[in-house]
Length: 162
Image (tube, rainbow, N blue to C red; front, side, top):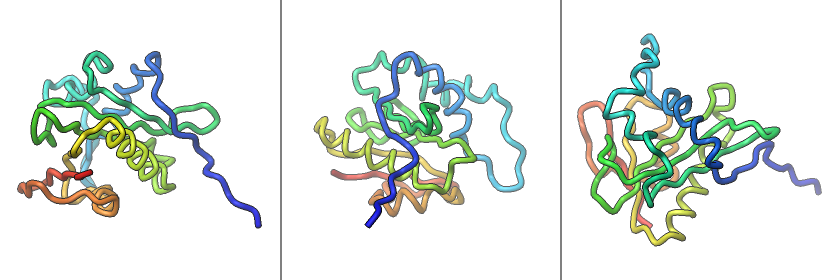
């Protein structure tokens, strides 16, 4: 019986690859169906820039990536920041983005599972994230075991308890 292997590899994002967070942060900004994408300058707005500014300098910065043929195709990273999905000063908040042509192939789910495993090994009690209610990724987060922490008008803050 032949076992199929994932066409991608998951590993820690290397320090020299941290500049990729700029591109992946932009890709992570949810654009509602039928809307025009935001201008690239959105990643410099203070509430969004804090997801990548000086990444690696905080003790709770962790990033994993998925690669295909040694090319990064997805990144999942966490920080303890005062972001859209923050719940307290002890809980890392997720950010994740997969290049559009690689979505729907299980890469995001694998990255999230790997990050949850890493955070659990580091002794965190929970992790959080913010997701627009109409974002298709919300289904994945619920499937992985995230629960509604706060139900806001257009989005949820979700929490995963270890």
